[in-house]
Length: 227
Image: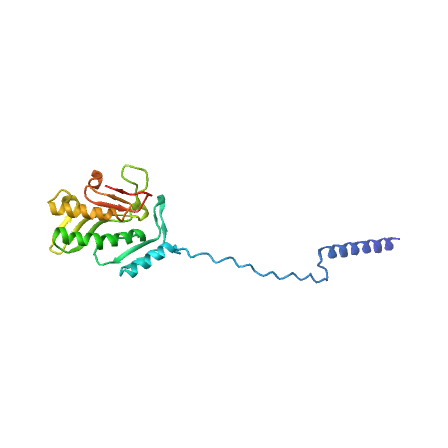
């Protein structure tokens, strides 16, 4: 009786093990082959420094006009400051100090102003060739004086012009020439008016005391302002 009971228990145990093996499809069987799945290729990301069509066109236009420049990568800084679609002017026929990062549209307007506004005015009113323009620079991560709003300088979209140097050695500064002799006064006001035809915002010593020593040009805003 005892032997029969043991044989019966053994049969039940084997049946249970066989059922378990069948359930997990592992005991002595071959798993069903998996279907091969083709990997899906993600679309190639756009280059991090891809330039917009407008900026590419701007750069091409400057180069076709004989301007030597360096196209700069887009950059974003803390505080909301940026350098997007910017270039560095290397040579455009008028040596200019402190020109660093500036938007390409600003660079294009500046080159036109220097070539076709300042150079002829220097010959006409001062009787000498222009050999250098001195600026206070372009990019600067800061707000507008007395305001919490970012300056266009913080977007590489503005330039401050301080003085003009002539071939005969004279240096006409905005600070001294704005109220200087008639020729200097006429020259500085003429180059300001030339700038007003190109830039959206032009500020001079006539605007406020903060601009007593420079001409500010930028391409910000939607309208135009010349003072």
